[in-house]
Image 1: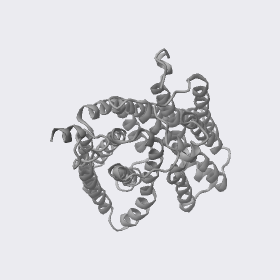
Image 2: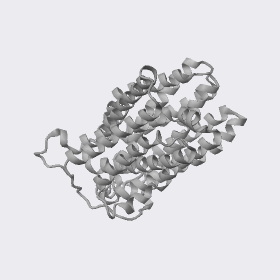
Image 3: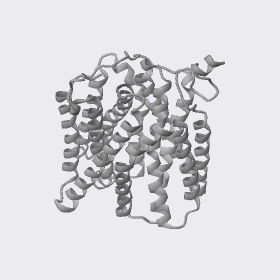
Image 4: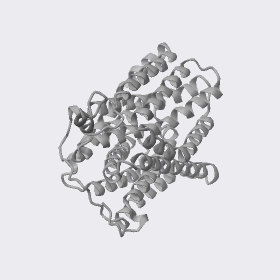
Length: 400
């Protein structure tokens, strides 16, 4: 961990916030410009964009391999290398406006992104104490949202005011992220770890509830990203400006709300926080199925996005039940589990959408209720040996 004499701005939590913001700048610009760039410069059709998005998810499936790289590279150093690789991939995106060039740069960007996300979660769980984890993760979400707003402003100014080519915007965003990675390497000390991490794949039976919650979280993410946004365009004819405004509202709310949601999780506990999230999701998804007002649909979309911050509770739960040496390896495995839904849900529910869009959201509501059942299995005070409500804590057992 950090030296007590280290200035506050060189503490581990500050490094985590800087990295989260830098990643958000690169990825937000990449995502905001992608559809226009691939159509206008590389003449993509639906087939090519589908292949590109599938390729983007491949490193997510392979996130568990990060544990093998850790045999040769320290975790903090690898996180900064992954952040820099993401920036490099985004920088190169605007320079290769061909089908195969975009496939290649997407793989570079996505490999850095998914390795970074895995390591960011692992380092946060290791460096931040259990009593402060939800609030610290809320601050990271807030920093991501602030950086995303900055990125959207840069894109708008670059296109509307300065008439910059896409390549310059990609170069700026990726270069800024790469510069932050290099600066963090030079400025921040090498923080220690209280526990040496396992360097092999770990699947433990006692973590089954964490795995299940992680998988269902990935499914929920796909319904929001793929189908809720698509509904806004297809059913309510939102244009690009309307969707951009919704994104801005979501990020503005996250800047203010995410740290407060983190503190709420610390006070309430993981079970109550996730109960609120999944009850809310069940109602929101059911409302999506029948909503007829664009204003109400927009309000549901914003509320849906705001509930994402509640997912902090899943990681907080894992930190409390985990063997400290398992955190890095299990973070990689969990990230891979989360991405199983990235392939299954869009394809299967896309076919269901053709028959009945309402059925997609009702199925999503049913999945939220399954998640609710899983959340209710979390004990009030989770710890090793007390991973579910059926197990007694050591203190309770001692009293019997």
